[in-house]
Image (spheres, helix red, strand yellow):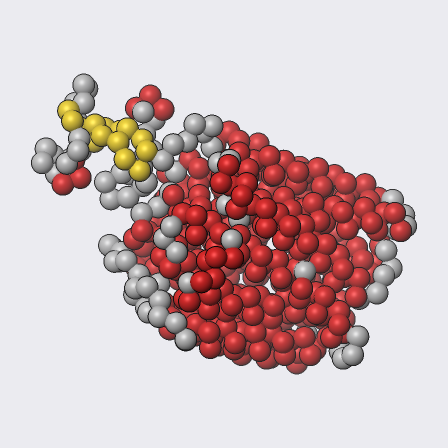
Length: 449
């Protein structure tokens, strides 16, 4: 897996991702403690609202960023968003009102919504080989896990010496270092994208609507969001209010989630070489509602040492299962879109998946504040199970890349029909790697192939 780091461009981009995510992880812990200072026991409601605002920014901005990526040089776009995020993080330690947190979170995440899908669409062009790209996806998952494992541990170390406000300084350093690393490489030029900006912004959404495996991917994203929301929104309240443990234990709980995710990411390249994406993602997703049922039982019981260990185990299981679902997601998107449509496809996946978090984040926050943690875990568990069942129904068990299909609308002699032959019922039949594009507007029925 580490062999992909021999590619100089990818190595520097990966390092940029790591340092930015370490900074983001420090901000995650600091934001939770800031919310607790401002709102006390209602911190989960404040965090739920702040994270819902984050999702609004992601859902609204990402499709437009996907369209913009075809017109603005990628390096300039990535660097400008890093600098914007650094400026916002610099202002966060000085807020004194909840509404100020909400405003700065929106600005910070709007910049992230432009950065992340552009970065994701660049990697398959830097590493075109399937094996290298699969390794890069696992490396990216490991980088994200630093936000849940190394960053909280670093935060706990910093908190032992200074106040949490200094954690935001680490966020600023991370974004500035990321910008410097992106400046140091030459990135591939984006493939030409037909149509105007608004049309390109919607093309990724149309891909998801027309492609069965992408619709299933969205259902799996909902399952992950339902489980992840209780981790990211309610951990601070579970630790401080239910178990009455110190602030450093928040980092330990989040670190358990990250440890489970990281272990899975290390194992996935070998597993995906033997089994298909569907065979890995669906069974892993089934573990999510089980983990949430365990979380409901733990939070319904008194906060003992045994129940604390059980909570850490449930958080680790959620991390492991989420990683096994999310990491192959990039492979699913890549095989479902033409090269020219990759920025729009990744932007749509980013936007739609975070629409799921837009639902689950406030649900986790408001339910915990109003109905209690056990009810919250059971409700999110039911939502997660619904997502898994929908994905199993939407994603065909037989899902080859090459599909035979008929073109009834293209005239004889069209360049796309070079290898086609007349179909029995009219039109022209051929087979190839099938994606939704200018020549293929809908998915062929099972009977057609």
